[in-house]
Image (cartoon, rainbow, N blue to C red):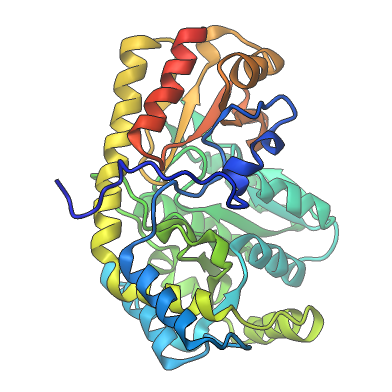
Length: 393
């Protein structure tokens, strides 16, 4: 028995919670009694040191303009990546963004012109395609290869698409959302070599890097690509790791000095985005300095949740295949064995079974027939979701 109780069910309703209070917005077919396992935040209480730090900050009773451009803040980020990944960041290269997605789009607007091409690897986190298109850049999918059990990169296809002179940026998801791959060193090295050969920027979304399943290891893209670090931007955040998404704080690692100035001009001079709230700063420092034991126990619990889903499917829903994740707290389920089309699968999930998962097609056409399940919840909730599927198929 660990120090933390992740089996505790916390009622999140009537707290302005997107996941629970706005559940019908995940899909027009969703019902108010649907069980929400869609939005990628966790149904677990934050670690006590974070709560204590927030109480202390509230007791100060003044909440004016604040800045994370301090020695204490940057040391907390630096020491976390040094301890967890043996990655030594230059503290002056850590920049603030209210979120990883806004940072990615800001970077793409700086690094590309309209109608330039951005390479993504579908099925992939929905905003990669949507936000790039909405900013008048062309999305090129270097689709992942699926063999019925596992996903791999298609390097031959990537080589061809990277040769296009209009291709300027490779948007890498590491670990990959939703398929759960934790890329190996040789895979990352090949990606970097291809991008070097074609002078492509790499934006590496590593927001799930602390959520790694047993037997796997996250390798930062910067660790492999140190010789190319001026053209690699890493997007990180405490939000997924410590369930702090509502704090709106991300750390963007930019090594290129020219790009740093372009970033600051875009963020400060054009958009007037200042700095995080005092609560975001306090919670992040506490998380990185005092909550390592919490994330270690959380990862063990998440391993158990994934194992539960796997065993449940094998015993009760043999036609459903779990693409077993190596990282993230997301389960990518393949329902193609039932032969349902997009509308039929959607109707079943939202209307009949009343389970609110993300539909696979939203991650690209490669996701047709799949659903993404957020497994970061007490096991009781997962069991209820699986039972609803079994009892209505």
